[in-house]
Length: 345
Image 1 (cartoon, rainbow, N blue to C red):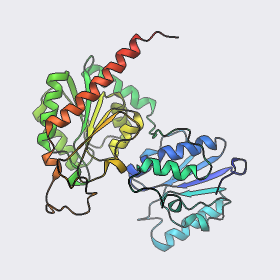
Image 2 (image 1 turned 180 degrees about the horizontal axis):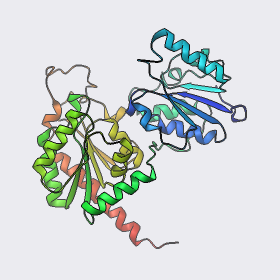
Image 3 (image 1 turned 90 degrees about the vertical axis):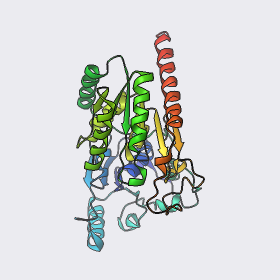
Image 4 (image 1 turned 120 degrees about the vertical axis):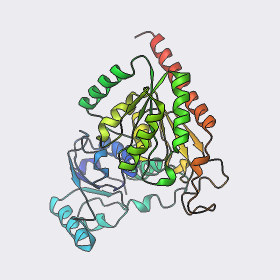
């Protein structure tokens, strides 16, 4: 199916509930928006992932699609179908790969899942989405993920960093994750943080949203001393992203924050064990991936052969991660110096 942009005035996108998955679809959606600049766009997204698109001026309207409440069960599916039919959309794209578009009454109703079923399993998720969008005749304008940072958040982050990290390397670190197996070990973060502070004159920003993540960040901060900016707690993601955007390096496990860093172009050191970096790793930015030192990694978290309570990230070597970080920092500094020495034209 190829869509004709002249026949499309209203577009509905049914988004994803996982924040990270929604970010990995952002490049494909950005290409669609560029292909249909005059169309009106309505995005239905899960309550958690709504922060990815909520403040982005690219979209005309964002609505919450909560399948645990208003759109729960069969009654919820019938409700969304009625809404789609009532508003007479010309194109409906369901990133969840459901059959909803078939019942939407719209002119174009592609089945998203059918467009990627034959793709290689190891193809990156962002590329899979871009390819699926291209099968509709949408040009690939860009492969860059997208996350909008509002101006007020940029100003606030700039002010704090001017006070706390002026003239020094600012490094963001994210030790937490909803999945305990993907959390960065306390010892690894402390040892790495101390080396970056000592050898790169770094100031370390520690993030973590959920209570257990906030507790982990504060425990690390206590050991790193005064060269720390504690950014943990229930801080809005757009403000955290504003700090991330200013960082010379971001260190994290496999979390949604890693994909925000990719969208912002922040150099990223990703630490992986249970999950697959080839499918869900950093995308489009300068990055290095450090794997847990086991032949079974990555296992895609399908059940650890070493035991249910085994945490392979506990065995990641600090030296290997530090080398990856140093390489990224050196490349970033070299690029900045080259940019400063390039004559203006």
